[in-house]
Image (cartoon, rainbow over all chains, first blue to last red; front, side, top):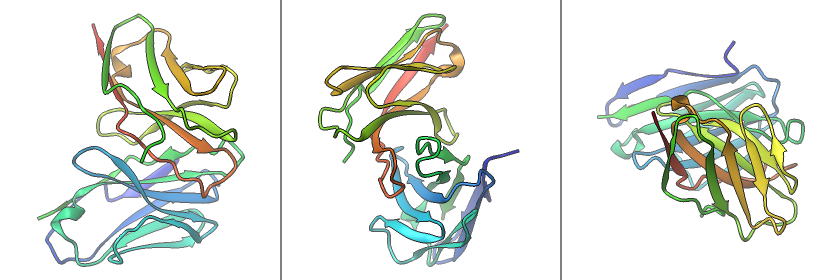
Length: 114
Length: 112
């Protein structure tokens, strides 16, 4: 069973559209994250939620809105998509303290905005 | 900015030990050293972490200098499947609010 799963894996959409990427973890972790990896391959944290509460928000445009309905899910909604939003988005989770704060990543969602 | 510096790329012969260095001269006393790797088109994968003692698991060994300003990840018998980008990261152990900041990592190529 996949520990951190995200859907869709690939998404091609037009500028101006609104899209969502869903993430679920079955590890029982209390913290979830969204990371963005751009064309230059730098991995940058976007958001972090702990028990459904936002704890890290890294100067991400307001068009990006994470939503955590419960601690096993952290979805990413993006409004008015722009060309620069094209990237790979990784969801991740960890358990504070328990396993050394090891972060487990999903396989990524490849977003292409045309 | 990342708190670590790593060589941009390295290569190693298959079957030999791959030694990946990392400098973290500004590490604080309660920060751990973590290593992750990212195989092409996959999500980053945890390898190992440590505070000040050397650590070993089924994947690798981590050697941290006494002053904790640098460390070395050792893959004892590199295989072609170890070709990946390796990230050295420092992070607080007990705080989910402690950000993981990825640098540019080391691109390790294993040659047959």
